[in-house]
Length: 172
Image (cartoon, rainbow, N blue to C red; front, side, top):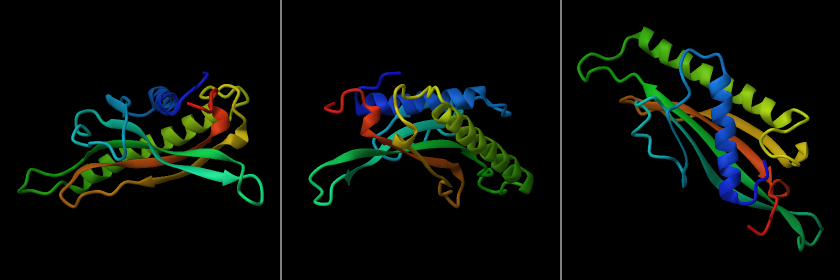
């Protein structure tokens, strides 16, 4: 896929994450709601079949000369995957089994996201960014999102750094 802008780069990451989750052998479908976001997405939809979102966390300039006059830009993306977390009914708290089932679902999602996404980026024929070299993509940490004490949404955030070399038109 030729990627010519940050919006297209974000969409390519979102599409790859979704495709990886769709092919994974988990007990549920990939999230129904998927979109590019400006920062942490609105999670009100997480209990309606999940949320998969991608947003740009920051742009980093890495100097390639001692004076810092020349360098390359790297785009730090976050892929967020969120599902419903047990809340109980306001009177009776969720059971331990409900927590265990929800945690198992989230761990399945996390494993599918990391392994499927890794395969899409690291195979010799990179299926996310054609023509992009392996050293231009850094797979970062996958960390759990915060869970509100009252319940609601929980999930994982996966960080991916993509170099400007992966844009076909770096002026975009």
